Length: 116
Image (cartoon, rainbow, N blue to C red):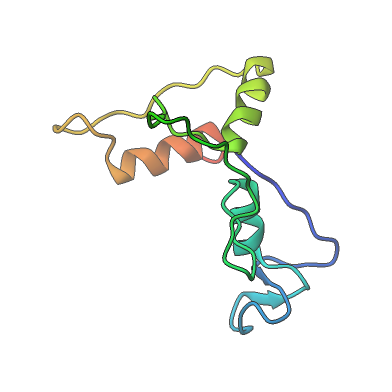
């Protein structure tokens, strides 16, 4: 899943909102906060009152344990991914069966068409 935010006139860097960080190298004061936008995208944004902006359903007397992680953005991605025609291949795994960092990065670059 990829989220894209395009800001007119902003160069490459991390956007900072007013009062939400101090500008530094590659940190640009453009009136929005990338951290805040990422939290909003995943449905975990916390307001100044310390309350999440995502409402949660009331649990019944017996506790509901989700069978999977419930993330609002993932639900949107399911719809979008079913419309996608791209076929992705998994990166090679190392001896432990996990994709190595090098393989994972190379796979991402190949998938993006930046490496052969």
